[in-house]
Length: 365
Image (cartoon, rainbow, N blue to C red; front, side, top):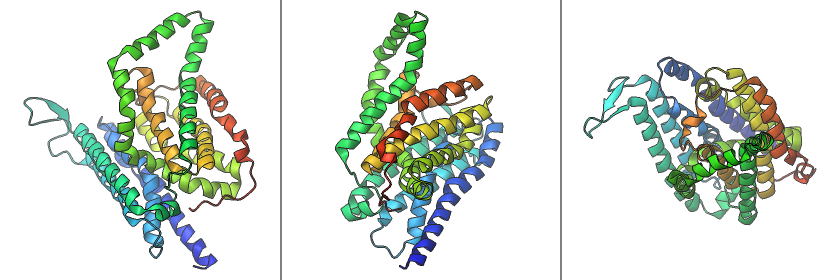
């Protein structure tokens, strides 16, 4: 293709990405609002939104790069079809209640479940199914096609090291302030004791050892975000605005993308604080994710870190359930705390030399 043809294709692909990741996701605020007024669980719609960025990238490949033989069409189709299925289940969880909006009696005696829980279970089952298909399509694609669309497992040793660094920083970010406050208040033994009690819980050990299996079974949800943000949009933003400003603006864009879940799912009484806090977190953690991606050019490193970011919270808090993420209360003063913490722990990586290189990075987008 000529340069002009390439530019035209790039514009069309960007439009497809924006239409899916933002257009559809923000339109889903309508059923989310309706579901919220009904008191329904919106988890399935949230899970669908997680898959939207990668689906936007996949749609661009499938529609506008039909003649490119290096595109792994099976892999891209899995990403897109999974999103469509998750989206339809999310819409159905609000508008289609074949057994009534209350409880549905299962075949196992008198046990009842909310209908939305049935949809959530179906959605998780399809996530596992499509994750298996994702891995199959990954290996079937072959080395050349994987490299062309940025899904190669490059620099695995460096990637493992960076994941380990992320876990250490994440634990410091989560527990550091509490332990510091306990030390100042001379209640450190009690705080240590409370976390030792969490560690003694059999669910703690089971949750830790199950993480690798869970990752393999729901990887498509976290690739759903990272393939859109780090692989696709980060190079575009950095090419236009520079390595530093580009990754910072990407964090803002990523944070704003969370508005539907921030307003309808994560909180009820502190929406402005949640949106601002989300942007702060996305900017600073995005700096570290972007750093890891630039160091490895391995999208799977970011996928694993994103998975751990979401799944370590229930373990460290001792709740062992994702319910800890819903109905949060965010005080205004907390925004100052997370700004300082996130900058100190993750944001400082913006000063790493990888963000100072002037040489244009050759990343296929």
